Length: 217
View 1 (cartoon, rainbow, N blue to C red):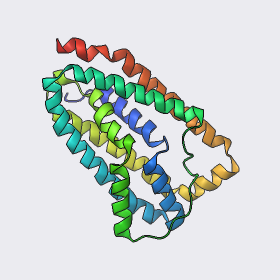
View 2: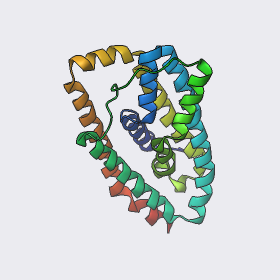
View 3: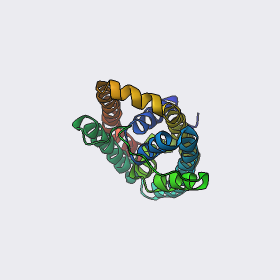
View 4: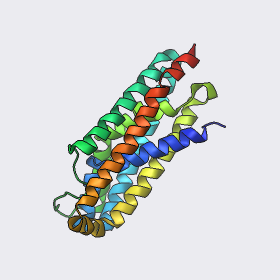
């Protein structure tokens, strides 16, 4: 099998935790949905999807060659990605993040601008860059070969999870915002659950970090 089921599950969990951790993409998409409607949010999400594809293509084609020349970099990226997940977990419970629906009204934009802004927002999003440069590569097993293909499969899983979750949040943004205004404690529990998921994946990756280095020898 090109990609092990455990790797597919792992990247799906990381993608889920990342998409539920507020960042530039989520703030922009929810802002558009609340101020201009769910259609505007979905058009913006289309631009976000293209941004993910750009990152996925650039990262896979570049990192595949780098791993062959510098095998120890694989382990280094794995540790860096795990530490970043632990940092996000800390931010989620420490209150440093921004609430998913703590947004402001925005002026109405055309569909072309909504799409382009979704694209630009994602391309400038550090979370997207780290996802493809430091997180997805650590689920690639060089011993299986076809590193580029593995990267595209795992990247496809990440994009699918991100699009589905974001689409659901966009469509239900108004109802969710109203619910959270009535029950603010639910937002706290969302952050705590996200933090636990991020921490579990991050710790697991740190425990496994030496394995790729050992297999490289």
